[in-house]
Image (tube, rainbow over all chains, first blue to last red; front, side, top):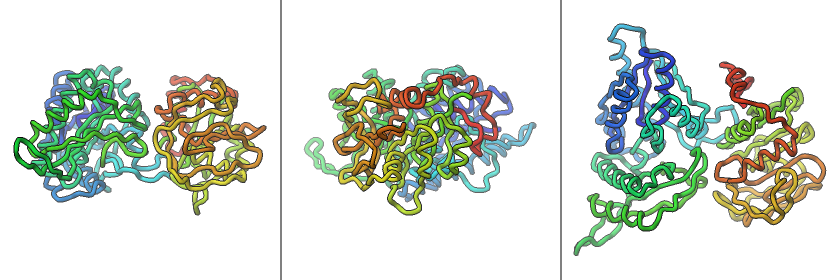
Length: 301
Length: 217
């Protein structure tokens, strides 16, 4: 069996749970898609190798993902491309795993949660409409070789966190804000490119840094930056600028099914905006998203 | 036989949250599609029936519906689309709202009985809305229980039968007193027994539950 890790709490808990059941027959695969946040890869490697002592293979697939996404701006197409590329990478990684003596790889463990399922398909055959195709549900390739193991499929995030704590996962992993499988690709509106990802990653690191500094990380369900393909005029120093906009999103929720925007103290917002505009080249404006779910969703794509 | 709640899924993204709230109140429930026959529902012997929300409009064509006889089998709570369906089947008028209502709204409780037992008359509570349709006129024999700024008819009940409808979503965490409203439906209206435990859930969950037979409550 192999387990795909995204860096988020769901896939980590699913992998730890299956590891408890099947032990060394499980190999965890972490794909560096090039769409990760700052420091994400290091944190996953630390948690799995050192803390949980579960074998971990890291696959460097940045070029493949970014090449496949080049010029694509439709959110649903982005999700499909990422889902398919994930499976290609897992299939190759599985062949590597099979070179070592042992049983063939037949199963892929995923941390699919109930909200992923309901935003993608109606799980009970009811008349729901698709809101988003989640890469680990509707975005999978037809005819892929693995059978799926999804032990968290009927749980909500807060229930998954309880399971994670029971399994002894470190708080820095269990308490993490949710991070979607398609990663930063769906936080760059419009086409994804390396320079844009770099700016978004930098802004996001500043944002989370200031939230932690203010002691607000645990009060917030999810906080992240969105890169908008919109340019506006600014004046920095004595020069006119015509640069991009970063949107800040922070919401409160208990299960991800409904959410409200987080009422930041104004001084914290001011500090975040000043730092992002000063430190991230190509950004001259920061806005704060004050929409609830519904009618908006938490992520922008 | 122990209490069991039948949840009919009209396609809401929050149907599973209804089941979750019912199981947190220690009552068993199952989610089924709205196409189950009236005989099937009778045989299932529900202690109460919840009609979920959904993306359709009750006045549209080829939309999921219910046999009006459903309302006589057991106490019924209709949520959003479910309330619109109760009103539609009972002779009320459901129309597109002039002002749609999504997210936070304030509900004023006019009738603190049944699902609103323990609330005060005139009390205003925060509720989460998500609808583009509304009940314009009450069906015959129905009474108004609550109103919000954009929904003059936001909660209804039958004058003598245990049939309730709410336009808002008591199952979501952003309706802070929603669990009380669901508990009122379960215990005050349906007289359900809070006897379900997760231990029973793990024993009774069958690995072949995809066909909707055995399911965690």
